[in-house]
Length: 86
Image: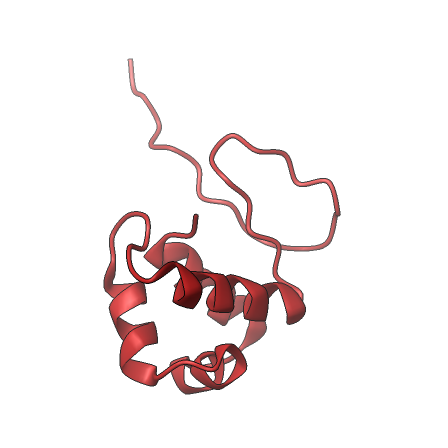
């Protein structure tokens, strides 16, 4: 799975815009826009999600799931859960 914020962050790390991601994935810009507008897990046609994930991975992005470990190294960012104040 991929979330809208993950897609936006991945594009930012690559320095590409929505149009470029759409071209890399073989999808339309409105499809990318709809996916990125999702607050949580992107919902939609599985084939489209697969194309986006494959395009991002080919470009060098490693998508890290919740509580998963990144084993390949490299630079990146990870969103932590909110801090709990006592």
